[in-house]
Length: 214
Image (cartoon, rainbow, N blue to C red; front, side, top):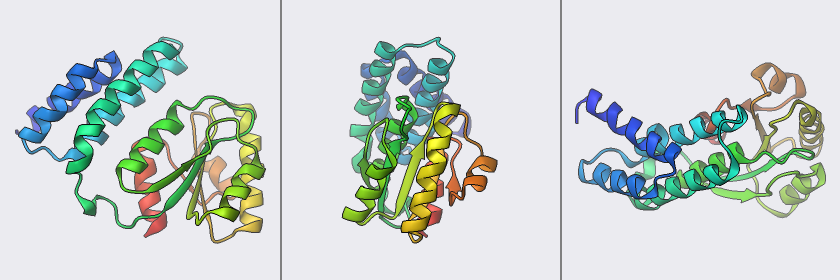
């Protein structure tokens, strides 16, 4: 495939995810393998891009939970096919990421996408879910060999909880890196609260994690 055909292929995969069309996602994943398209690129440029669109539509209240679940299932169908074909050198070094949505926030679409992509890239991910208090993050770091703690917040009110969690982690475990993200979060905010890194979206989160591990 030339570049134009590749871009068209990625757009079709993204749209299939948005539409929640699992059969089409599976068909395209198999086609991508047949055409020897890089499996990791299909996930990032097709599946993940589609879920980013879904997340945006959800935030605008143009898409709702039942539709999101269909999109997530459709993407998972493609990812299950693509996973075995991902090259081992697509991630520099394996490691462990503890991820969760901070206390007071239950919006976990973005967090779930980041988790999926990190696992696809070969990382061990401990998912604490949503509405997670600071002490749960601390307890996980105490019990597990965690390299990075990834915090998500989708509401401005929960960003203050993110600040407290980063503060405690920095004080108790300065060698554990922190990464923050979410719609209201910015690089300036991340710097202000002392986080080690910031990711604007799920695919960028993988690059940030690779950098922190490297």
